[in-house]
Amino acid sequence: MRIEEQERCVHDLEGSLQRAAMETDRKLTIQQQDYEKKMQVLMRQLADAESAAAAGDLSSTGGGGSGMVNGDTTSAEKDAK
Image (cartoon, rainbow, N blue to C red; front, top):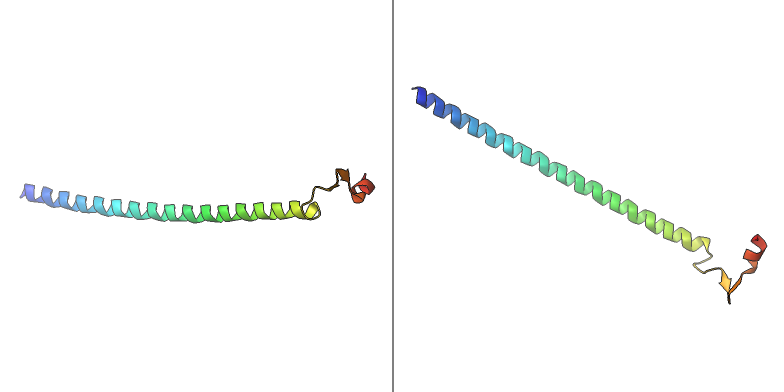
C-alpha cells in the first residue's frame, strides 16, 4: 500500500510540475509579445522624430538649399549678419 501512495504522490507532483512549466511558458510568451509591441512603438517614434527633424532642417534652410548663390551668401544672410 505504501508504494501505491508514493506512486500516486509522484504522479500528482509530475502533473503539478507540468502545469507550472506550461504557465511559466505562457507568461514568458506574453512578456515577449509585450516587448515586441513596445519595441515597435519605440521604432515608430524614432522614425517619426527623424522625419520631423529632417523636415525641420529642410524648412529652416529655405527649401533645403545651402543659402549660397554662386558661392556668395544671399542678401537675407547678409542682412542677418
